[in-house]
Image (cartoon, rainbow, N blue to C red; front, side, top):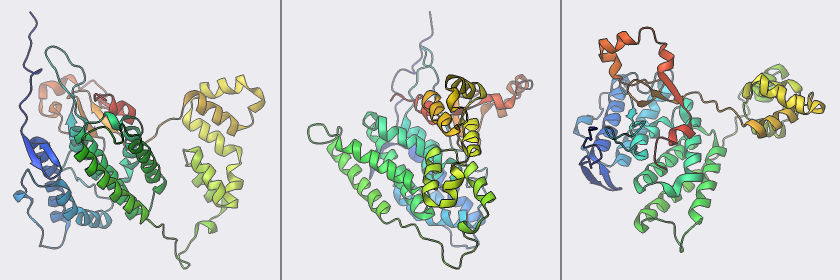
Length: 375
């Protein structure tokens, strides 16, 4: 007879009442641990001696209040030590997941728990992870917001608010924030019987947070560089401007650049720009198939690119992605790492001597990340 474990039963989680509602105690402890480690890093690098001790933090403290107190300090350290990792090898946010449910192993992956354990809220401030998180938020808001639990919705809106604050501080990627807010507005307006589906009290909290996000977005003003700041972008030689355009991976950015300056409009019309854009997103076989099907457009690389885009879709490229460890079934940020059980097991390490270490970590794009959860 097959062994049937007790995993299918309720694990008896301990829940704690917070100002935002009920939350699992282990999740609060994880969030407080991450916050406490950030404060330890601040204490280690800061020259001042009047730092707070994070050992007095209680599990039922409000996460928003804690993060608000240390947000300015963390920002100061990032500006003072830009090359130093925020976690510095001390914090390793990770989340164990269930890949496949069986009679022996039954599990459920919670999206809200994963977003908190992977510390998405703080990861917004890392430029390497910003675009990955924006793509994930875009998928959740546009397609799966109504399918999320109340806790996951709260976490989602918290991350969007943090994105708004990051955009306001950095004055970059405002168009991404505007697109998120427009999608969010469309979803909220799709009401059922006069209001969105879900708890009335919960959606009142969501609407208050959405209003705060809109207030932050409305106050964003892109400051123009001063008249005395040198050199200006318009003073760069044409060769430098061309190199900038060659590093844009989105055709919409090229089109916007063409409207911004006459020199860039002239450069965007060059065949080299669109040829290298095709070579970046598509394989030689895909490019050749489109050229063979339309010989008349073989010299018009811009038309070839748009045909390839509609046929095969664009390649997703991120500075950093979530990785999946095949050893311990753990999601983690690649640059930070994770506490893998293989590192502490000598017998298991012997089995991995002849294995390529890079093959043990699988990159997880945003669409694949959401497939681990019941959405």
